[in-house]
Figure 1 (cartoon, rainbow, N blue to C red):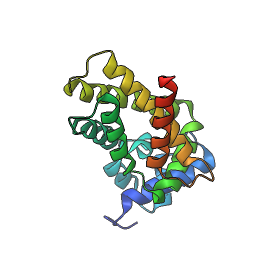
Figure 2 (figure 1 turned 90 degrees about the horizontal axis):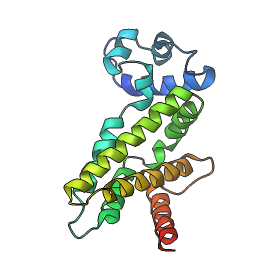
Figure 3 (figure 1 turned 180 degrees about the vertical axis):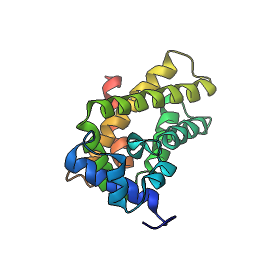
Length: 188
């Protein structure tokens, strides 16, 4: 196998999705993922700490991007508008060409209880980061946590819709629609 081949990280992720979807997360080894990607195990471990990390790569980047966008929202924005601003910025991280990979990832996570718990932990971390960003904007508790958790719920529903078979709308469009619907529901 070649050393230092370009694109190894992307190939490892693509290979992991293919192999894990075919056989299940627990049945696949790092060695099998590396072989399918045409690299060594050592190369795998240069990019990922373990096989779970292949599926959760970019988690901290996403959480940071949302929280920073919430913090950077225009001062005139209330808590809800600031959070919407944060998720609008995050939607840019999920262009339509990323949808097939996100669908594969979603199917893998849904099929494994441990991975589903890890995904839920990621969402809790996101809510905490958003609440902290809102706190930095002067939003008191419990309002900061309520808005953060509701917004994460909107994102989860929007993302599930975005990766659903047959869906053609962009993530931002779906999020906007769901935030509007939630606002209407809460307004009574």
